[in-house]
Length: 100
Image 1: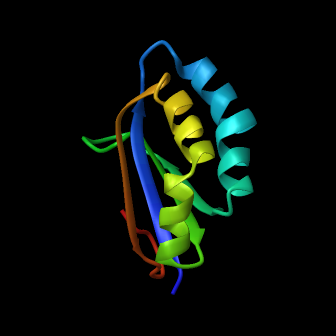
Image 2: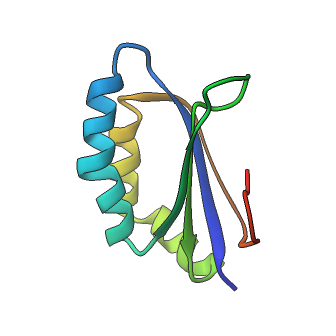
């Protein structure tokens, strides 16, 4: 069964330009290279919710756990932490529509 890896975070104020360059050039391509199929990305413009929400589909929970445990994933996430705060990651069975 496919699972959805759901990540959310807030961008550190003053780091927005560097953040976007990192995400577009390194994070998203790296995530895809590891075997996650990016499915959606959302930006909160109003309300008390994480600023960014990213979803990726992985073929199976075991594969998702392998990716998250990999050195490359750890490296990507450690680099992401230079630009974000309030990072959260969770996995859920893939369902139709918006998942948070």
